[in-house]
Structures are given as C-alpha cells and as structure tokens.
Image (cartoon, rainbow, N blue to C red; front, top):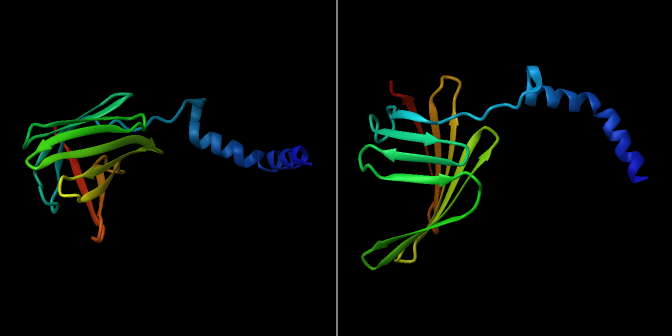
Length: 159
C-alpha cells in the first residue's frame, strides 16, 4: 500500500518535479550559483555607520570580513559547525559560539555570546545580495529580558 501511494504521488507530481528541477538548474542543467560576497563594501545612509567600509573575502569554505575602522578580521566557516572563541576581558572572558551556513542563496551566521556579567545574547545575521547588487545584512539580536533588536544594513560595492 505504501509503495503504490508513493508511486501515485510521484506520477501526479511529475510535472511539478520537472518544474522544480528546471527552476533549480535552469538551461543546460547546471547548478544555480550562490552569490559571492567578496569585495569592498560601503554602508549606505541612513544606517548608523554610513560610509564605513568592510572588505569581504569568500571561498567555498569560509566568509571573512575586515572592518575598516578596527582592521579586525572575522572568519566564519561555512560548514554549519560550531566555532568557539574566547576573548579575554577585565573580569573574565567573553565566549562566542558561532555557526555559519548557506540557507538557500543567503549565508546565515548565528552568534551566541556569553559575557562575564552573565548576560547572554544571540545575534543572527542574514547575508544576501538584492536585485540591485547591494549587500544586505539583516541583523536580529536578542538578549534575556529585552525585546529583539532588528537592524537592516545596506552596503554598496566600492570600486
């Protein structure tokens, strides 16, 4: 009974499956490419920090960004595995657990941070390229006992 039900669904859904394959692979049946975020990007107004620059490098396994102001580089592994980072501070250390992976055509970075004063935050960054070729990073930060903070930052490519 299970097999015939499965066969019936596959037969009925054949047209839908063909459409999904055509959309996913397009002409010539080649896999759809994920966007490459590599480049020099500048934050657009009215975002706080407008005019600030970030340099992004991306390959198959990593996404790294260097901020112009601090010169500090963050590297995210794109395999979805958790990375632990400890940053020494006065009074203890800040512990960050980071995961980054592709979700469709976007990269999603989730960072759970534990501070020495017992405060905990979770930040989710969703990286995408819009129809105009701009880098969009949607940030959502949650902290215990606080309403979520949501920010959308738009970047234009610097030539």
